[in-house]
Image: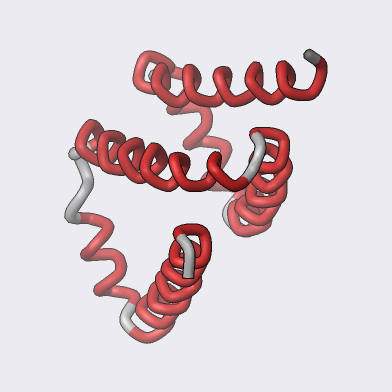
Amino acid sequence: MGPIEIMAFAFAIMIILKLLVVLFHPKSALKASGAFVGKNALMQFIFLALAVWTGYYIFQYFTIVDVAAIMLFTTFLMAVAFAAYWELVVPLRKKAFQNRHRMWLSVIIWLFLAVWTLYALFV
């Protein structure tokens, strides 16, 4: 198995384990999530490091156009999950927009990906 297959395998296993925990031990899942409350910078660092690590391998096999299309698909799947709790999503968005200074890293990353995609498509 190459790096992409290993990441896909890890993804599948993590999804199955997470679903099992959420279905059969929801309090454990909440407790695990709660352990990271208030550690926003640490969480951003961890997820950014994981994104860089996985991105290193992904961009060796796929173009930014491929990745952007896959990310659009993923966005729609995430929206399906969020739509079930839309009454919670809207207030969360309002709070996030009121604290935009905390979103600077995400904004830079998403803008970079969008510009890179457009560049690859049209230049």
